Amino acid sequence: MNHPADLSKLARPATEALLSDLRAVFGERLSTTHAMREHHGRDESSYDPMLPDAVVFAHTTEEVAAAVKLCNACGVPVIPYGTGTSLEGHVLALQGGITIDLSQMNRVLAIHAEDLTATVQAGVTRKQLNQEIRDTGLFFPIDPGADASLGGMAATRASGTNAVRYGTMRENTLALTVVTADGRIIRTGTRARKSSAGYDLTRIFVGSEGTLGVITEVTVRLYPQPEAVSAAVCSFPSAADAVNSVIQTIQMGIPVARIEFLDENSVRSINAHDKLNLPEKPLLLFEFHGSENGVREQAEIVQEIVGSHHAIGFEWAVRPEDRSRLWAARHNAYFAMLQMRPGARSISTDCCVPISRLAECILDTKDDCEKNGMIYSIIGHVGDGNFHVLMMVDPHDPDEMAKAEGVNARMVSRAIAMDGTCTGEHGVGMHKMDFLVQEHGEEAIETMRSLKHAFDPNNIMNPGKIIHW
Image 1 (cartoon, helix red, strand yellow):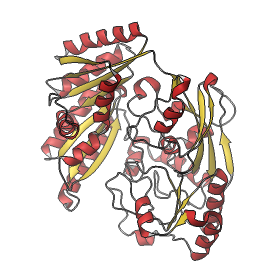
Image 2: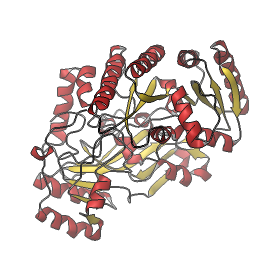
Image 3: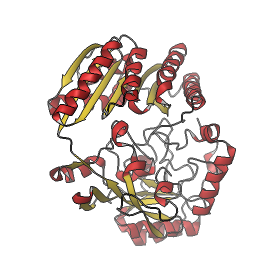
Image 4: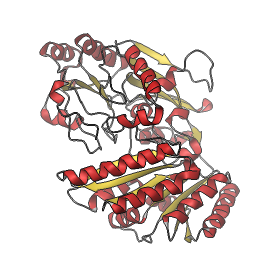
């Protein structure tokens, strides 16, 4: 893993003078307690905690700007924090510094139903937004599984189960309010659906993982709630049959809203966790959105496709409660796998490949896991070529940890060789920094580094993530 051997050499701790200045702005909303720092010094990755020196809870963009300006003057790192659900070490305080918690910036600022847009503070979560707009007949479709904050989702270019139809945060973020490294407040984009006005700063900050600035407000696209929704689940004798069904479905242009793949290990774990009795074989979970007739036609075509690939059953879930139960089980797959090996730690990784190479990449990765004796599962938003591997390892066993990282490295190299990417949606964080060179080449990385130096000359914005300074 990309883990510096001696963090003490990198530390840029907050001084008492800086803490005093921050306390003047935030009062009791500044915390230096060990429990609060530890909570903000970990995420869902397999890294050990790396604690900030203090945590501040911001309520406004202006407060964020004040904090960043003070930190920049002292050369002290700033780490933006949403809900802490990131998977690649994004929020860890690698060099110490100040974590800015944006979770209390949780107001929906404007809903423009007639324009299909909403503007929210960065701490608003996806579930909160959908709850707020439920009576407008609209919904926000990006669903990474966790109830992540919209600011964090923009910062990591999140996607999730609906991306095959609705796209990712890149396509669904229209505008941002960002605090730059020197404490300026800038606004990128507008609510217009397109623009040719200058550099696309919105897309530069989407996916920047807090390394170029702190996102404080987000304007997103909304979509009409579909007239009809239905889900279907079917099992297969092999992973190859399941994934080949997906490839044919996508190549035929069927507008499926979601296609999720779970291997037999995933199914076994969610059966135990959620008290289900699904066949413990590779499984596909579909969801169809549209008119009553459109949904029925889509499902009938897909049923024919999966039948030609030896599908075992094709069961409908039309009632909302049945669909919710299936999707809840899918979203619980990470925690279900943790229960399969108590005391273990999950090394979670992902990649994304062109849809035509998906079966090959999954099968080769599965074979690699088996050869190395991994306790693992493979799940994926396979409609867009993205899949995830969860490996349960003993964190105190260096050999197991090394084997898991070896599987990860070979999977990523395999994906890049297929003209894919080292991460489809987890982001880079600390864990995948070294793979960026392999994917993009030194010249492209140097261009990214030039951007970082221009936006953040003192290297205070979430240092040690995405690229080496």
